[in-house]
Length: 114
Image (cartoon, rainbow, N blue to C red):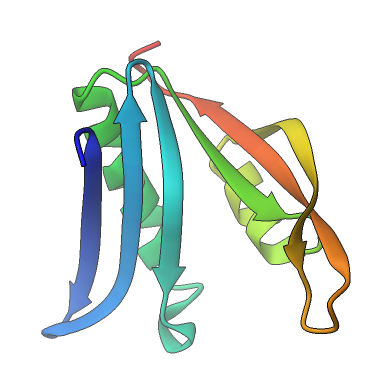
């Protein structure tokens, strides 16, 4: 898909994390970010995001947006530490294991290109 890109984090020949995004004009949307539970809190996610920011800028993006479940405190704190701020909400976007609706918070971060 045009504008799409992905990054893979590998440690000792083992894939441990990934980042997938799409740039459309000046906007980049983070589609997915994942790190193996055993490798979390070691800087892998931060490095993937920072490298993703660079690629998004290279493709002309001036900002990057993402969604995170409102009840995902760890994720929200992580993204805030990287300069993301809330810009919107999608009511009932996610569903918990019990079927309960959970709002998605839309977060955005300006990139250096902007």
